[in-house]
Structure formats: C-alpha cells, structure tokens
Image (cartoon, rainbow over all chains, first blue to last red):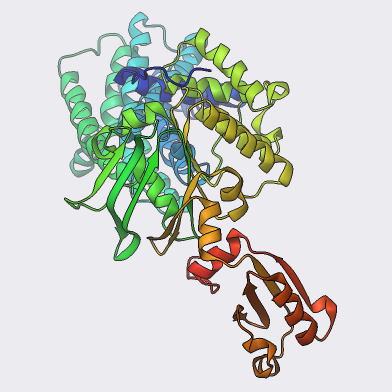
Length: 263
Length: 313
C-alpha cells in the first residue's frame, strides 16, 4: 500500500453522480420489490377507475376517459415516488441510518449530497412515469409517438417534488409528521391538478388554486405529449412555473438541510 | 519527520450557550498516533468533527486550525480527500454486500473501477475480511462491521486517519485486532487521530494523548509519562469501608500514602507497595475486602476528570 501518493479531488459532477450511483445501487438491491409496484400501480388505477368510471363516462371533454386518466397519472406516480424518497427516505438516511454521516466523511460536500438526492429523485420520477407509459402502451391506451417525451416531464416532476419534499423534511423533527404533508398537501394536489378530472368546470376560485399547484403544470405538459394536437406554446408558461418552483424550493431546501448536516 | 500534521490554537465551539470545546490547543505530529481522551461530553467528537468540516467552530480571529496545511473552513473537501474518516456510529449500507459497500465509497473518492477492485481486495485481506467479500452487511457481526468501516476509510490511501472511538462495544479479540491494524498503519506512515474513553486503548496505541474534560485540555503527553509523573505506582482499593474507624486509625496517617474516598470505597495511593499491604492488613475486616494493584491510566483519568457523573453521562 502506498500512503504517500498525491491526492486529487473528484470533479463536481463525479461527486454528485457518485451519490446518485449509491442510491441506484441500494434501490436495485431489492429489485423485485422496487421495480414491480411502479407497473402494478397504474394497472390498478386504470382497471379500477378506468373500468369503473369509464363505463359511465365515455369522454372527458373531447378526450376518451381512459386516455385522459392514463395521461394524467404519468406524473402523479412520479410525484409520489419523489415525495416518498425525499421525505421518509431522506429522513431515515439523515437520522436513523446515519448514511449521510458516512458520506460527509468522504470528499462530498453537503451541497453535492443534496444535489445527488434531487437527481436520484428525478431519475425515479422518470422511471415511474416510464412504467406508467409502458403499461398504457401495452394496453393500447396511449399510442401517440411523442408520448415517450412525457418521461422527461416525469423527470421534471420528480425534481420538483424532490426539492419541495426536502424543504418539508428540513422542518421535520419527528418522522410521523410527514403524514400531514401527504394527506394535507399531496392528496388534495392529486385531485385538483387535473390528473383525474378536468379543471375547466371548477368554480373560478378553485381554478386559481389549481393553477398555483405545482402538479397541475406537469400534468398539463405530460398530457400534451400523449394526446395528438395538444402541444402548444402556452405550455412554456408551465415550464417556466416549474423552473422557478425548482429554483426557489431547491435553494431553500439546500440552505436548510445543510444546517442539519453541518452543526 | 517531526513537522506537525495537525495544529490547533484557540479552538472554541459552543452550542446555544453550552461550551463544547473551550479554548483548546494541541498539535499532532506527522505519523504519530494521537489520542483525545475524556468522558462523554468532554468535546472529543466535536473537536474531531471540526477537523474535517462536519462541525463549524465558533468565529474567532485567534483560532488556528491547520490540517496538513488546510483549513477545514474552506478546504474540507481537500482534507477529506487525503483523510480516512470513521464516525462513531457504523453507517454501512445494510442492503448491500461487503464489496459493494466499498465499491460505492471508491466512487466517492473518484477511484477508477479497475483500481478500486484491486484496492478492495487488498483492504479486505488487510482487515481479515476476505472471506466475507460477498456477505450482506446485516449478516456481519458488530466487530466485522467495525473493521469494514475502517477498510472503507482506507480506500483512498489516507495520510491521516480520524477515528472516533475505534473499539467501543467490541469484544477483546476484535479490539486487539483493531489495535494491531492501527499500529501497522502507523508503521506505514499514516498519522492517526482517535478519540477514546478506554485508558487501555490509549496505552496500547497512542504515542501521545490529551485528556479533555468539559471542553478543556487538562493534560497532555505520552501516556506512560503522564502516569509516572502524576500518579503513585500502586493503588489499594478497599470496599465496604467504615469511614470513621479508618480515618481515626494510625495507619491512615502514615507518611507516603494518599487517600481518596468514593462512596464506600477507599483508594490509597503509594509508591511503596509494602505500605499498602500493611494498611490493608491492619484496616480491612476481611482479606477479600481489599486488593493492591499497579496504578493505571484510568486512575489518573478519574482523578483529573472526577468520579461523579456529568449530565451527559
């Protein structure tokens, strides 16, 4: 062994991606229990809601209900996976398993570590939205060629809910408090984002609320890639919303989580 | 080889009014094994974390922290690139096997895959874990996990090894193995800084130690010298003592002995074991009530840090 060598610091990208790599490896270590649910969940949704509701409602606006629903839940699954990862997952790594303590003993800065987390949550978001898409492709519900682009929206959605969830986590001292976040914030978001029913006929005030919700914007973008003729320039507003939202919550989350990593 | 590896002056750290480290000064020489000793809450771990930027010291223009020429305030990444750091709690990835745990950390250090494989094999055999390469962490004993965290900290061939309580909670066999490995590393030229509250550990592997209490340095030096300079050579311990009767006796007032009461135990210190056995024979009710032994670092430690518990113990 040579203990007199020169030392060099891995590049910024290598540091961030090594955190990402660690999460991927741990995630893959229980491959079946982690890789199956993303496929089962949309199946249950489409069979449950699609068959149940679908026999009463043929069309939602001008769109077939199954297609409407399928294009909506591409990003909701991405939202939930990123939110779970960056609340319970992050909290356990921070407080119980002390995984971060180990990482911060290696040449990794708190910023690198948090960015790695966000990147991984985005990747999970992409994978989960791809899983939904694959189910809908196989079932013949979505067949628009551009629909594969919706996975990118799944990635953006994952990043967005990673930064928001990390910000929430930075305030949480007791793991049970996440219940408030999931039932109090994410569940209403799920219903009022336009994922399962259109927003057009809601009262004006509710529409404003819906526009303020981050999920609404990714639902709209994902759907536009799945249904022919919906791509439009107004989607750039949604993209702008997502960018600003990610920058803002990301900045605050990094600042606050850092304070829990360095004392 | 005597230039200093770590140089600390006027180090302070307080948490909401509680002073964890109080104006600490010390210096670690290159390639020596240096121990921070003290009871829980003495500020050992805090001091250690400051060295690699996990904890930020109080702002103070007089503070100097120099770790191989780097200041952890701005250069903690560089410090961590040339150091091996092992926190107190084991934090291995329990879902993964031994090799994968090391491989993931090799990425953190930016080691190339082929180089990493070679290094991992080397380290597993160094820590005597080569048969466990493919075993999942949850199937390893506590001692194996501890050895693995040391192996993990050696991936980058560190010139500085920082180890918080290397053998706490381990059985004697593993403790001796770990001491042995730390000695080998020192021979290879690694500077080692460790915290411990085991006096035996300090005696076994540390070239020099400081004893800390309430954030302050109480004494400093090679363990052997500290002991011979500060303590009598022998101790008599007597249990179930009737305090009044013993204090009234003539043996108690003999020259060349020093005494200390703790609850119903009496400690008598002297350089002359004869005096101690005379004391024991005349004062103990039964022979089994006392024994005489050489003084050790623990006696010194208890003497300087006190026998009563603090609020963090």
